[in-house]
Image 1 (cartoon, rainbow, N blue to C red):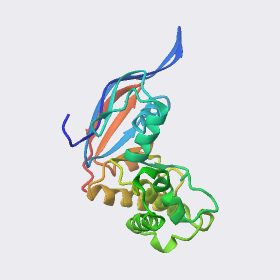
Image 2: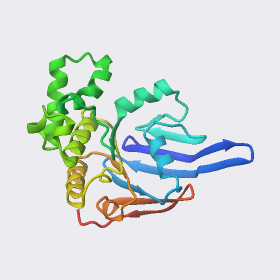
Image 3: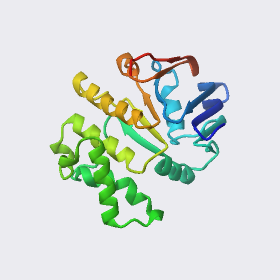
Image 4: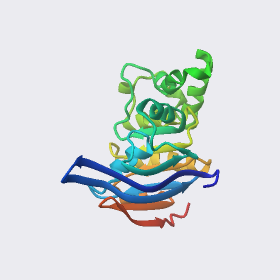
Amino acid sequence: MNNQTIIQIENLRKVYGMGDIQVKALDGVDLRIEHGEFVAIMGPSGSGKSTLMNILGCLDRPTEGHYYLAGEDVSGLNKVQLAAIRNRQIGFVFQSFNLLPRTSALRNVMLPLVYKRQDKMTPQEREEMAMSALEAVGLAERAHHEPNELSGGQKQRVAIARALVNDPALLLADEPTGNLDTKTGNEIMAILKDLHQRGRTIVVVTHEENIAAQTERTILLLDGKIESDKRVNNGS
């Protein structure tokens, strides 16, 4: 593994249940994603893509196999250690935005910095970093608006800014356009493409082929295995 490899998983298995009643959600998956790649993970319901996303996001651990994130084997870490990795290395963007209500966009974006206590940043430094992240997604003028004062697309921009504020190694987007109309969804994808062009490593989990087509690589899961792994010629 070289220092440009962000994700490397080896013979990854995730089994649910015990005894005779076992479900192999992931069954011997091998995958490598390099720094700066823009990847879509697709698959029908029950394919294992949600399980894979949870493991990639350090929200769950595999039953067997290894997962190296930015060179660190995180496969066997406990919940506290995984939480620390998530906050330091991974930025999440969810379909439902997951913003705190009655809290300004700026304060929502600042949250990961508040949890990162070991950095000893001043409140002003946190605010400046959060504002910079909002500027990066074109939403600085809405910094002091609460979620109920924002459109769906603006909420997702806030969520992307929050995911970026810690400068993570990996940006993980789970159905990021699922709650948006087509036009707004394409605007969100344009932001992700711009971030990719600036060097971000982005993995998008989606069931929409038109969204996957806007990335540069599509991985299709079926029955817990990688069915195909193709480069996408999207002209970008």
